[in-house]
Image 1 (cartoon, one colour):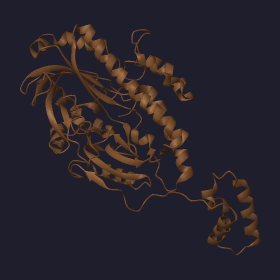
Image 2 (cartoon, one colour):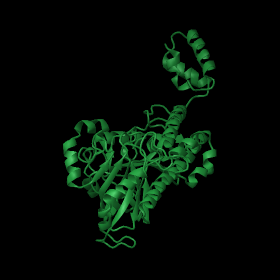
Image 3 (cartoon, one colour):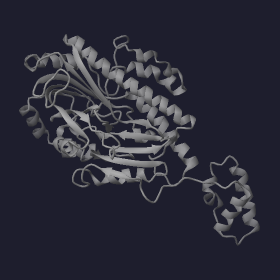
Image 4 (cartoon, helix red, strand yellow):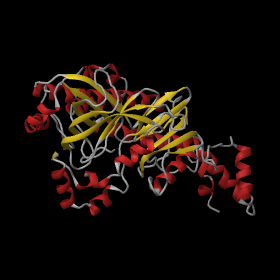
Length: 446
């Protein structure tokens, strides 16, 4: 009998050496004892250990689309694993859903007074921001190449992306939260070096024409406009924080639970580690917003334009609603009347939308078109000739697209939108890409 294996639930007990020694002695004194009798002795002699375990039945799930037709089956399996957690309350799967790390991209899960760093993701508070510009479509098309050059000059993507000291300044640099934990203190300098930059991979800075299908502010249905749209998050700082806290969640969960799959661990909001993660996540949310603001402001200034209105929303984040922590990984809030942006791809339309507050979706919508296959498979399936012909026919200027980030790598945005229209959101405007700048190789997650 291997008593060390038998005592696995006591390995992290502060008195484990004493327990192991006592059990070894007792087994020698009772050579015919069964494993159940040994465990009964341990429970009677020492404080018995009680652990949380996965539930046999998953918490309620709402799916917006058909598995196998709109959503890969692997994504369904991943979210069901999440909904069997002992702290899970309910969940939803958006029509752009696809397999991710642990929780699928496009997955929404509510946990009770607990936050899962891996459910938030490695690019904490990745977000999309749109600025309507004081520029007519005709003037934009006339000066499109020159505006593309301005945007290219004012953006920096991917690993090593930064700006010379003093070129990007923002009040986020002086936020007192940077001094509240050792992790944040250590990462402050890195964050400031990358301030105003964008991640690699599917992160982008696009110039698009806008056609309103509903009245919006000063714009009437049928009118047109021009906008800048960006997609990025909390850069290397957010990735490092996520990596640290995913490991801390693994450690915490081992103390309180058994049978939890890797990647599905959590932190209690009542514990210091959970509170520190929440503080870090919220700071990364403000840091990501500062990055977008700087890109938009610097481009507008360089191009001699004014920003008329800005809309933004975030994904890869958690929201506290009462005792429920709503995790939206590759999904975005869509409460009643809330403005949102659902990007398509490098070669397809995107949409400005208004949320309808669907309760079954936990007031969520998709965050984009979503992949059908992995990045690796997308590279294998890529047809460079077809891609170049599509972009040329659509007359889209493009820079920095890798094979796994072309329109061919994603689901049909119109299908994804149709599954949500009048259910999760209402379309306000259609956005057509005219200049697309991307970061190439991925470096900090979806």
